[in-house]
Amino acid sequence: MSSNAAMIRLQRSMQLLLPANTLRGIVSFYAIIHLTRAEAAMALQEFARVLQPGGFLLLAFHGGEGEIHSSEWFGQPVAIDVTLFEGEEMEQYARQAGLCDVEVVERPPYAFEYQSRRLYLSARVIPRFLS
Image (cartoon, rainbow, N blue to C red; front, side, top):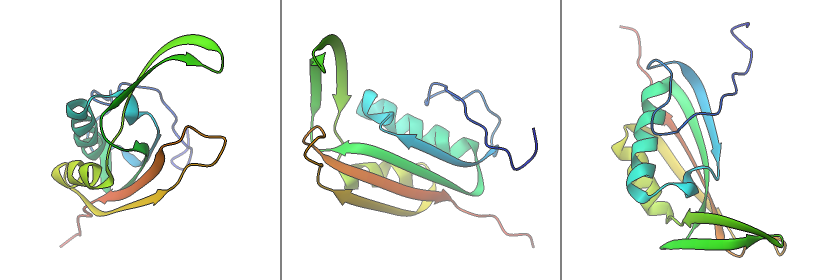
């Protein structure tokens, strides 16, 4: 695989099977909502561990407080548990993980979506400069 090729892997976000400083970026859209608050904080620590200095994290999650359980999805029986996060809460987790330049953007839901706020976090690992 060339050094410019994208690496796509599905792994447990709290225990990535990668060495430290491996990835240039991580995109995690709505995966973190399936974790508890404590697990989400651990996942951001793990993301920071595997990102290279200057590497970026893009994270999407549902905004709100508490948890939601659903037993139906598009007319089909399911068992889905979702944790809602406030932007300030996720920003705190990111900063505690050692990420910098943390920004959170929020938008309202579209009519066809589940009616929760959508939040998008961008952050990066503090770059190390050569002396």
